[in-house]
Image (cartoon, rainbow, N blue to C red):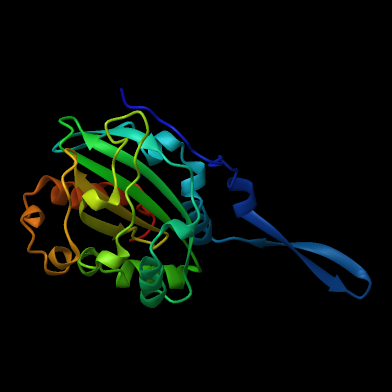
Length: 240
C-alpha cells in the first residue's frame, strides 16, 4: 500500500488581513499618526500566489492520485527541503535566466503509475524575488533545453517500505520542467523505469537519442505530462 511519510513544517498561514492593509507611520513634528496604505488587488493576488505552497493543504500540493492517461499513485512525500538538494547547475540556470530571483524551498514527492512501470519524483521549487524578476522565470526558463542538460537534473526520491524503496539516481531516464505563469514556481519531474534498469547516460540525455528517450517512452511521457499537470496547479488565474 502507498505510504505517506515525512513532511516538514508546511503550515497554513493567514494571509488575508496582512495583505489587505499596511500601516505607515507619518511623523509631523512630535506627533505620529498611522496612515493606512491600501494594497492593490494585484499585489494581494501576487502575495496569495507566492504563499500558495504554505497555504495549500499537502494533499492538494501532492494529491494521493493524479490522472495522466493512466492513474498515478503517490508513494510518499519528502520533508520540505532547502535549495541545497538541487544541483548547483540548476540554481545557476535559474540565476542566469532570471536575475534577481532565488530558490526559497523545494517540495518533493514520488509517484508510480498503477502498473508500476514508471517511478516519477515531482519537485516544486519555490521562487523568491519581486514580480518583475519572477516574470523572467516564466519567460526565460526553457524546459526543452534544461531536459538535455544532465548536470541540471535533480535527484529522485526513494520511498522506504514501498516499491520505490530502492530507487536511485542511476535509474533516471528523463526529466522535464515547467514554470508557473507568474514565475513563482518551477515544477520538475524526474522519471525512471520501475524495474530497476539503468537509466539514460549523459550522452543520451544531451542528444535525446537514447532508445528510452523516444516520445512514446513511458518515462518521457510521465516527465512531460506530470510536470505540466502539476505546474497548472500553481497557475495564477488572475494573470491574463
